[in-house]
Length: 498
Image (cartoon, rainbow, N blue to C red; front, side, top):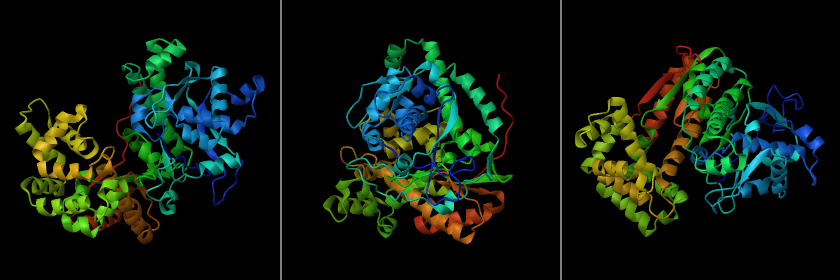
């Protein structure tokens, strides 16, 4: 498990670093509110040469959780930290973590699986508190954090250089109703207190801390509260926390990580924001894999090779894939797939067909749409042999056998089942971040623009011009007119905590 850590650039709240600077001079993060590391170091000095900034950073890593890996975060209570990354920060990382364990600040789960699961770290219950913000000014550490981490043997596939025409809009003009977010979160927190914990490593934590299941449930609720509040805090404090994924080129910002329900509380300089979203984005973009003229014009075989060495351009298997797309593109199920995609109602049509073919009578239209989406994602993202997904995967195969055959061909090879998903996300990021937003920034430099993967967010005043630009560029690239949804970020009925 590995991820990129990028610098948290200067904000108006930093009293030590004074803008303007070209490069980051400080790093903004969070630690438990009731943990005073300065006092701890004074009362119990470690028996090694300790850099307090490094200690603060490791504490913040554990506190912030499994950043960048949603599956690990969803499945594991401990924060799983990759040893290779920790060694990149300092070769003596184990001394810092062992010191925290000796001082009864954290517990360590030593269980790990090579190249799959890293050792886990978690605070004891008393330090699983709400956050307080800190700023690290150690120049050597900040310099390391300003460069994306590259795991050995896994070079960057795409550039991680920042995009100034997008970064520049994360200013104090981007506002959030912080009090409303916290009130909303208190309601969700009450619901989380009633949820049953499902983490895989809870037994290890309970064994080390001797806490009750009720207390574990409360800790999980606090952990989720902090994680959901974090992007809102970053917007509130104008912290420019942006990074670009080195594998598929997606841009991650507070707007991509904030809970969808909280978008209603965000505005720009008092103006309503509107998200312009590409409907059915993954099925829509997959058109370039099913129409041979687009497959060849856009040189998709070169992109596939970035993620699957079995598909080297001009090799036998790559040529076979090209022939397969050429000969099968007029099959009935491929034509039906593309027609549904072009209508902008792919999941709705697929859901209705599933209701007929499977005799489903206990789902409403929304549930059918969600079920169709689950079947589609199984075909796009999962291994063909994953038993937990077999039922929904086979429903996609039975409806679109030729499409599924092409997708299986693309995902060929042990460990390369993510080729299809990575290719589509790569195309999406190049299209939205570089072509669409680059063009908007050049034509309308005063238009505030943000991205949430397959959507562009702007103010109501620029909505029509930005939407037209999105439609024209995507149409020219993919070959059919896209359907763009408009989502206005308007406040709904206030949520009141019980």
